[in-house]
Image 1 (cartoon, rainbow, N blue to C red):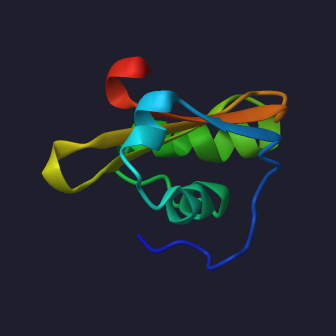
Image 2: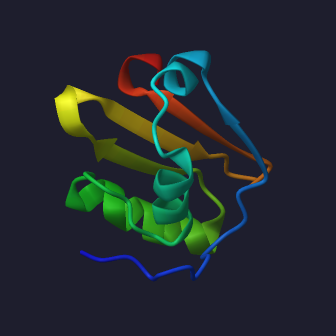
Length: 92
């Protein structure tokens, strides 16, 4: 499933990343753009539907990306859209 190129679907609020993610020196901007545009990555269908509902009902939004080398990144935007955090799977 492709994402809407540069079409933001919700507010990200304050963007933060854990020190473990920053230490990996990944292209966080690209991952954040995917999340922001509704490309939820490697989520199952139930979580995808929950994200779509969250866009209307104001619940938290979650994306999960499996990267090379087995790295798994989670991006979570809070229900009130006040902040978005980028973290490793084990930090979720």
